[in-house]
Length: 311
Image (cartoon, rainbow, N blue to C red):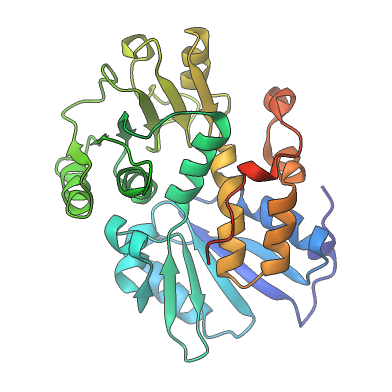
């Protein structure tokens, strides 16, 4: 899609960055630039690939530029940024991750976390129950921690039990222990990726970024009523989503998670008019990032199923 936002770049353009390693998979620039164009804003989002050991130096330098208006973060930078920013949202502190950073007038950098909020809104959008249910989160990185925190701490409507599994020794245990201190829900590290006994299974691991990756877990072990959410947005519908659907399970890729968190992102960055535009009707964003194989699943205008203004 041709974007008026990117075709009219000038010395007065507001610039937003998304940092990651890699960034080939990121969909946020397509969404934000479509919003900026539709809202008539002189703004652009640009992806930046930066190695983990250099991200803090880069972000610090980037925010010296006054026309850098905000920054988003993806794999693997969410946790290190949470430890480094001057201020952090409550959910970001609990999860130990942030995926958005803004600069205040006094130069202080504030981080916030919207992954979990977007995921929970996507679950609501698709009618996937999580309140008082048993949830398995596959992965223990920044996105997984955000999702587990949101579902365990949601008030009202928290999950009864959240388990995290990650093959890296101790990683899931550390995340679960940190979250468990802030919620009455049971939050534990799972000993395996076995989905048996869970009502909702969420892939928040890197599995699926490459077409030959192993499946996040065995679909045949899932409960007959289980729901599946795969937040990886490459190669969708993924083999895991297709296998779950073949079993008759409700299974969705993660496009809606990103669309749903676009509203609080824009609010956080002070783009309130643009946030209201998306809140009113996000169909144009679904048309922007849903692949051709899933275009028939795009719904019409349903503003009541979008995240309300929270900031």
